[in-house]
Image (cartoon, rainbow, N blue to C red; front, side):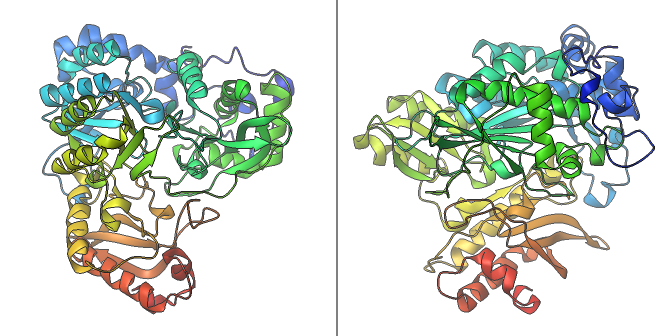
Length: 568
């Protein structure tokens, strides 16, 4: 059957038991490959990558109504396509309607940008596609992708032709696949870089994206690679991460982390304690993703991420299976990454190792447009630059700017709403797509967050925050905007009756400047905030932190020790 090949899998000696249970959990090398639910059935019936040709040959010519359900709501995701939410359906109906009833006849198209690295030619191509085919829409996601909306299936082949002509793709941008690889936005340019992850990211994408052997994973598989000491790729919440370190004997390489993920069952990744030489980075990545394919739990979608396997096995057993059955030879022990040396969002002006400058700017919660992206390409080229980077914080960097041109470029970027010197909340707020386009959302996010930022800039004007406060706004429980790892994380939900708002998470964070280790936020019983009271709440809790904090206490540290009354 297409999509269930295990030709490169270890033989019977690698059979490792799953959770203590008599029933099958859908682990291919334990229970066999018989599908246990409909998602597994449609993947087994036809490798989802095959849908590309049907889109080109049939659906783009015969239109939306010609698309069968398993392709429309299933295999299309392997090509970066989701039906977007039908306009006018409020959040009270999100969990009550089937996918067909929630779906519009238009698609969200996710452009895969591994490492977040773009040339100005590529950026201009995305901008033109946005303008011609997506009603000008464009969002920078916190996975370093660009998401376009209002895409018609009839236009998809033309869009692919244009993207692929400049080296971009949408293959496996969604689906049960190896998704985009997060990479340091300063890869190859930072003077303090431990190791450049560009070769590893390039080798993995060239060898394995679109590989039929990896196109039927239990669920999504998220990756991140950085060699920068700011720890700038949110490595603690990816399925696999390679983090730059220096081995005392072997030199620069990577520390291996596995099993991170948020959603409704958040779990931080764990170190395996191994050192990965740079020439083995792709081999190790390939080993981890094949463990997931072969041993991941496929019975229930809610238990099918790698984090659940790691929780059952533990780091020691995971390393042992990886080294004995999936790698050519064992890995040496290695050091942990050192504490972050700088903010990982790279906002502002920084010096490159060649003496030029990069400029990091903050679009408001990642919302841009085709017009804005085209203008960024124009500004960059007028300053002699042909390189742009996207970040895992919904931000954008322009590289290779001469020191004498920095202020002029900053002024031009500011004129199109991209600030290199943003207010604290404009800098530190991210938001998911929300109910505007997402079928899973209960509440609006982008406009709500933008309005809150505007209010907070007025109300807290003149008040200097001693530490940044991250504000992450999510439209549902799935945490695309990483609510559990924000100082203030907001989970969209129906509050009662017809009122919508957010459950509040407080004190979460990932390793960054001023925070040694990642940690999940806490909730306060009954603490929920209506959407129109968001700015009021954030102002109130910020002022309370400033009044109550001790010494150099961060918001997160205070939030974890504060009494419930102080947080409401």
